[in-house]
Length: 231
Image (cartoon, rainbow, N blue to C red; front, side):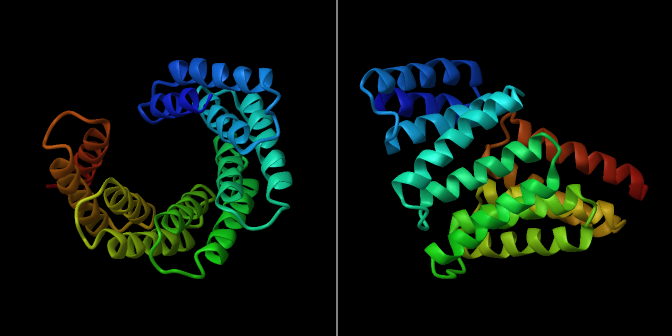
């Protein structure tokens, strides 16, 4: 079952959601046969399946599966701070965000962030903390709170610079892109263009100039901003 879960996770990361769903469901069925529904292994497989189904836009089904994994993890860890519980809070936040319930999403993302701070003892450079900061920024951006979203995007960016020591990394490029988008909303065309340019150049180096959706995303924004700035 663990091997199937690992394979399903790989398909999920490759965005092959239908194949991931097929493999993860097999893993869960096998765990049920072995009467292992209340185990970490079952919760891990279920959480990943829930996220996968979320990407297939089946929000209610996704929530049910993610929430089940969350309840199992709460029992296993007696509701004490734990990385798996953080992951469940994060996953529930994603579900609510995809459904457009931004305030509830913010609540879950904030809970995940606070728990991660306690786990990592307020470390100023951990990838999971940066993810939480970035996601909170995304929610504030969606709520139209541009000042607060920029604050969180900037915190995530600074933390990622410390983590990756200013070397090229997809997470750093994502932060640059998000800050660029934020500056569009506050009508600072020049600064947004600068951040989009940095994101594009970093993604070119990361993907060796090969075709990639992230490159196209940054290039599209550069084209739009160039036209708006009269370049």
